[in-house]
Image 1 (tube, rainbow, N blue to C red):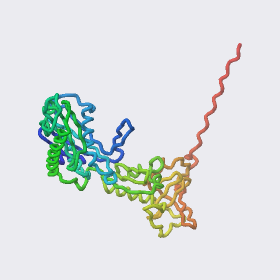
Image 2 (tube, rainbow, N blue to C red):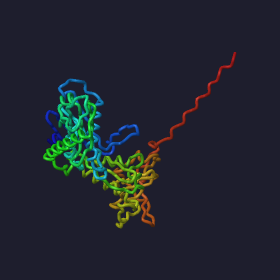
Image 3 (cartoon, one colour):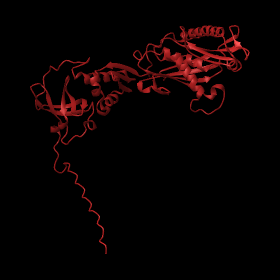
Image 4 (tube, rainbow, N blue to C red):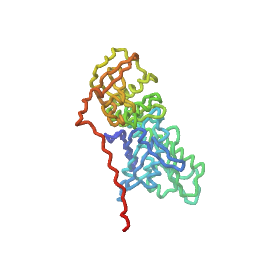
Length: 413
């Protein structure tokens, strides 16, 4: 059954016999990736699965704390089963987090997790390569023998069949093949014939489960959920990365705040990922970034030169919007399509140590045209429009503290 939770990005309920799992899918940006420490160093996972098995799922009362070895192992098994179906980041640039909550268990809850999370991914609109299902196989044989093709193979074992049987063979995959396996045996071993027979019966069961799953949702949804963030991808020249980020990240933080974005990430090759639940806000942010990088006249966002009438010297421009901030001044929009620099020395009557502490992208200021050279380059000033400070209100230098006299010892008597 899907979807079952209205506010999640994707959800599904999978029930097989008396085993039941609820899956929830959450989509995010690269900052949501899981850092997994391994013996070979840290690995950033853009898809990961977390498995929860509370005591109440088997009718017990117990403390619920951090996941134990069993939960971690079952989650890793299901994650490896689903990972081959996750699309390439160029096709789907989201980080995907899947969570499985076991509500009742009398059989293989890890294989139920595989089925539930596969359905949840399709409900979330993740363009998976194929649905994935799993089934646990069992074996009844004398503990002191090696099982062969004539041994009794059980399909989709229950809890007591797992406890009393000699094998727990978890097999997950799609219609084309196997993506993940895990095998536990209690007898002396398995022959090649027993393994082949088990895999054949598992394929028949897996194909049957997949056919029922396709009845619920044959293909991934074409659109993401309304609550899911949308990602817009764009490319800028690598030389413009600093301008988009700004000093200390001021520009990119202003883009996020002004447009209500969830995040805005810029990679080293100039790829920009804009994430927002509000698609209109993401489009506005993209337009602002295009304006920022277009001023250089290079790259894919080059704009035509301004051909309108130039402002005259002495003209005052009211509410000129700051387009971007540099360490030497701010660029403001004088007229639509015409932008000019107001140098740091012309921003205030007093010395400005750090522009980003006083001005940010989107602020509106009044400036006056104080010069226009032969290249039609404007020189703007905000300082000349400010009221002059009176002697009483003018800032006075802080007097230096008097040096304390050195301590002198009393002469010996």
